[in-house]
Length: 211
Image 1 (cartoon, rainbow, N blue to C red):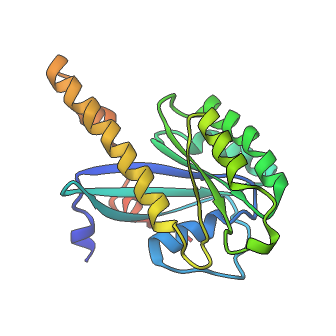
Image 2: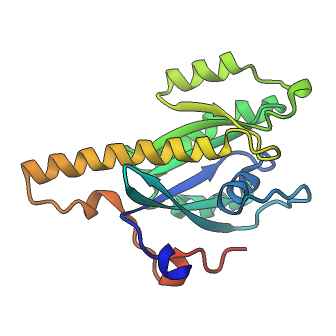
């Protein structure tokens, strides 16, 4: 199993950002391990996990990073963005303040991440329909105005979690493969220069050390 996991065509680093308590860790565990923990505690520091998907007969390995949303861990996050090609900006659709703070997270992302990073706005906890505080229409408009894709998910009942990660990874793959094609036609820049991140060890690439 581990040997098979080592075989991939592209390795993409994707980060999860947003306020503490919006469900980032459960989105990560639902996508990578199909698990959900009702007793999930705030992430301390940084953790990550990996999962591979198939796109156009290519194996895309996602290295998905999750960090604490609390202000006191903000220093960690500047280094956290390094090498990221995608970001899921998550808010809790039952807590309007987490949606209001999306602007702050988006600014931080623009300040620290690569200019070409692919960003998806994610309204999590769609199972809490009776507690909804952020309309789908408002979030869609915000996403459109800021050139973000948008989806609503529920880590609890799995709704759209697979779709969210698959969509962003596919979008990154399309951009990267087009860039690689352009560079091979126009110059000798190796495609790996624009597509992958390099883990420090085999264990790290496979999620070693992740809590």
